[in-house]
Length: 61
Image 1 (cartoon, helix red, strand yellow):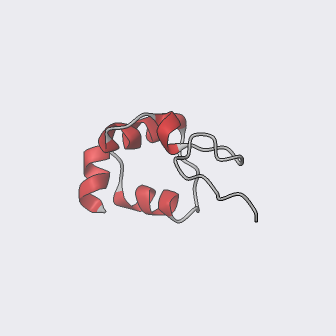
Image 2: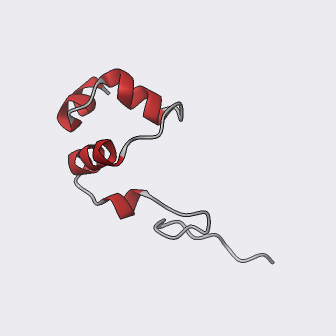
Image 3: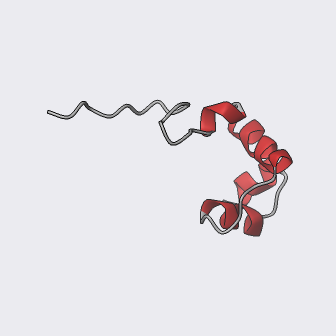
């Protein structure tokens, strides 16, 4: 985790709080994280209907 936090340019403690849901990242912090992941912000965000998520639920039988 500390290697990734350093790659993203944030502290390990900040990353841990974000991962554990204790903090919401500011937009600039989220940009740093997604840049370090090599993806775009909209690829990691999904609304409650699953938009932006690759996972689709099966229809009810």
